[in-house]
Length: 411
Ligand code: SAM
Image 1 (tube, rainbow, N blue to C red):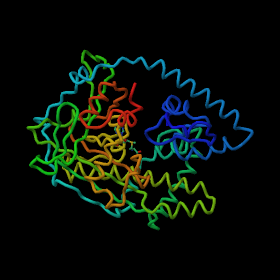
Image 2 (cartoon, rainbow, N blue to C red; image 1 turned 120 degrees about the vertical axis):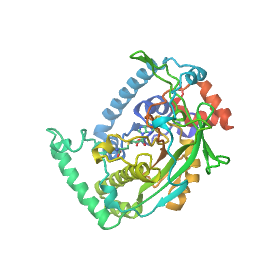
Image 3 (cartoon, rainbow, N blue to C red; image 1 turned 135 degrees about the horizontal axis):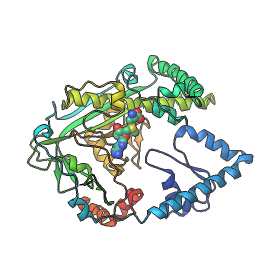
Image 4 (cartoon, protein in one colour; image 1 turned 120 degrees about the horizontal axis):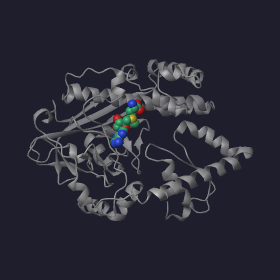
């Protein structure tokens, strides 16, 4: 965008959203390059209110001024933070997380190697795994479910919304409005060098299906209780060559078939139902990811066969292992998705990537499975040019290409 003259002189309102965008990123990286109104929208459902503010002559001026002031504040905050000291990538690697892969941390061999599809999965089972708290956030209602239903301020609105959501969910399930498909793959894997993970086609570990190139934290880590905190990278959670370790990949969607119903609502100018449908499809996709991860732990991979966690405990992520998703803080790099989708053969369950690596259908989740009991989510945050250059070299890509994709992480 920075270099594209198309964006100069534009007056069309530009709304920025999606899981990997932020108010700060919009203020610092995008707004200075666009002449027209630009608004960061935390969730698609808010776009209706935003557009109303922009299109109503009485509110437009004040609304835009408020946004301008807010972005200015974000830019100042960012400029102050910019001085965050970074280690060199060599120093960061020297302070990596050293996990053991023996004793109770010995990798467990999955029940099968390769992929498995789950097509047209029962939506009523998936619905039991829905985490409703983010659903209320979608509608700008702050609070945790179920307490939010009794909240002094938003309780009444939340209760009404929830009962309308239940009514539509019932129609989605009974009327088979949406189809939920998923695919997972379990493969032998080893850490290569410090930051990368080779994923092998089979147990001989000779043929590499693809290499996942990890990003390592380079910000200076504190000493807590006398312990130096590590500079982490997802590759730390996988054993080096010589120890047979494994990794999983998955892609799920709860949104196949949504267009027909969206069009029906849009034709009737029923924006509320259209947004509700999208929000529920998103919930079903996340819930399907939760369900599938549970089955992977207790059955397909079987590294936690004795697990018996309540739905609340699943939402609190009390299980062993993680399912980091590309575009999220531990693996901000979206460019791994084509390799993942290829190995998963995601197109055979109706899932695709757009040219900007967004998933289609939109109500979708994909990620990796890591089983190590000490694997935890973390945030890569800012990285240095030295890591960028090193990664470009490891991957045989140009620095400019990677720079474009990793821009939010570059200091
Ligand atoms: N219960 C939530 C829901 O239904 O919306 C689960 C989804 S929430 C976005 C959490 C998911 O985001 C995790 O399961 C993981 O896939 C991803 N995630 C969260 N933090 C992450 C991090 N630091 N790095 C990578 N992925 C992360």
